[in-house]
Length: 388
Ligand SMILES: [Zn+2]
Figure 1: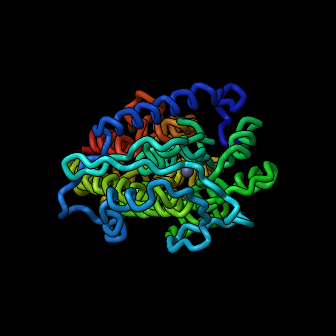
Figure 2 (figure 1 turned 135 degrees about the vertical axis):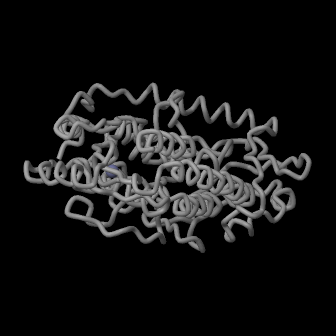
């Protein structure tokens, strides 16, 4: 069940570099926000897809003014969002000292003012860490459990993760079984922090033996990612009511960026001749992508929703037959996965292997897939260039 049977030995992975980088990125975003430059670009109304977030646009300035000086003792008990805090046995005891500071308004755009204290947030996957960064901006400090290039399937938490969890005031998990390692880790850390499941309320595609809760790779559909962003905003808003309007406004603006990305990515896939829009991937991570953007999944080297599974010789032979029958032009492997078997199949069929798709994790800071939006564009570009 070990996720990486190749060179990616977990013990060689150090988390410190990532955390430092992430903290730095947050700090940068916060600084930029103070200057008003990090406020996400407002998108044309026509492509803003999220009715729920629209309610959030209710003047952040007004909301902030009405709560100035209020000491917030908040709990997620009355959440109306799909996201629910399941483990907070006594949510009313959760106190945020993040005293609200007046929002500045510049040319009608709300700017999150620096709160007196940032909320300590723990989050599992790199995708939801990025969503949180865009929604929470400078009101939160994000401590990531998973780092870039570490695949979440079958991840085992470390001692440092236990410390991260025990210090967190609010914990965001992905759900759909992908990060169920957190159940035990949270219990072991004796954490009473609210736990927000980012995919709550979303219906996944059917699962398999390895991922019985459903196909967890929902971020590949931007419309589902937008719902996750709204869940995150509601989770933060319930916890930190003083920032509620800001979180909702940030979510709306970020979701508009996601919608723009979706349009851009569709145009990239449309460059592939229709009969060549066929994917063979390393593991079954790309069904949501295929459904959303009109691609066909011919097969996967590892015929499972988890790349912890091992293909049989028969599986590999069947895939080779299918690749030949359908004249598939390339195999796509993820940057985080061991491409050994994919390479074997590519060698036998004489087709190329593209091994730098972003799947279950974002890229390292500075890479072209180091944010969710960049990852989606990078994958579309990689796939399109290989198939057209
Ligand atoms: Zn996966």
